[in-house]
Amino acid sequence: MYFLGLDIGSSSIKAALLDAVSGKAVASAASTDKELPIHAPRADWAEQDPESWWQEVQKAVALLRQQQPFAPDDIKAIGIAYQMHGLVCVDKDQRPLRPSIIWCDSRAVEVGDRALQHLGEDYALQHLLNAPGNFTASKLRWVRENEPETYALIDKIMLPGDFIAMRLTGEACTTLSGLSEGIFWDFKEQAISKPLLDFYGIDESLLSKIVPTFGEQGFVTKQAAELLGIAAGTPVTYRAGDQPNNAFSLNVLQPGEAATTAGTSGVVYAVGDQPAYDAQSRVNSFIHVNHTKEQVRNGVLMCLNGTGILNSWLKHQVSGASYEEMNARAAKAPLGADGLRVYPFGNGVERILANKPFGGTFRHLNFNVHEQAHLLRAGQEGIVYALTYGIDIMRQMGLKIERVRAGKANMFLSPLFREAFANAGNVTIELYNTDGALGAARAAGIGAGYYKEMRDAFNGMECLSTITPDPTLQQAYGNVYADWKAGLEEML
Image (tube, rainbow, N blue to C red):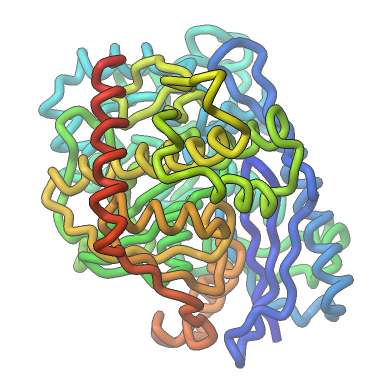
């Protein structure tokens, strides 16, 4: 008996099979060894074809079957994690009307700024816990303003994970957590934000119906079942955005706990039991997966768009080596990279910079001193310092971030990155044998009622290693971070 987890990322689609009894992963696959294309018709735009995600889901599940053959009815439930903040528009036949405007697309910044001015900071921060910003609601308004013919044909709008759930079940639905990540949710009124919809001229009927984060959200259709080789009627029992799901995957569910990830984007996500916001909306608050009316659980998220995508850029444009070899080369350069500073803000506007256009920047590059190893090290350090800058903002909000959990994947595979993160950020890092797809599979078991308590879903999860700050390195990294931060403030 297995639970199937799907992680709909912007780089690839990952899938995992979880053995329900042992709590161990029995198979894990990514749909492609190449990063999925992100189309940029204009500067600071980013789009993907939603149907391509569905095609990649089919490939990923086929790869799982090669690793671990299973009968169609062996899969008892499906969980979905997905890239956050994207906009998918479908017509009455559930066909996408245009490419998805994904998370790192910056076209709607001005739209969100206008909404903030109209609604006022008091309403935005106290009710939405965020400025409307460049989130899903603002992207929808952009479509209404700039593509009225397309807008007129919209039957439902949804997030990327909602689209995949619709392809599985034929049902258009979403969750409270999803509505909050789109900035459609009024935390104070505990309802969809009427003032925001009214200002944007959006009819509430365009929003998909609400289903529980954990529980029956629909059943796999005959057509989808045939494509995936699973049984028709298999329930979809969980969905969440990738960062709330990453926190869940790491058993980060209670106030004071924090999770981090460093894939295409980098995130630190801390759980609290009170409404919390940053006055400049540089970090954002959403409903966490285990939130209930009786027990408030919100996640405060700081996101750095330019994380693994910078490392990927260095791989393809500078080194040509594998990531493992890049990590080894980077470690040959001295701490601080002989003064070279990298600011990894080249993947759309960054929220931690209050959505100011910035661009990726190399500072103090010396052609007589700096070699490839310096570039690679300064890149990894720059990502760490940008994440630390975001952690500073969260600490100013009163969040205690002393210990963070992460899956041993992506940038956390680099010993240098782990060392820099622990010492510059003054945090202890715990690395676990999990990822987003496996977390979604565990959550599917909860939603299906197999695990009676949430803690039971984590029986097979293990802490692989712990990295603590080193007093001999903390001051050195702290000094370089202070220099990096001073350089950033000069340029802002």
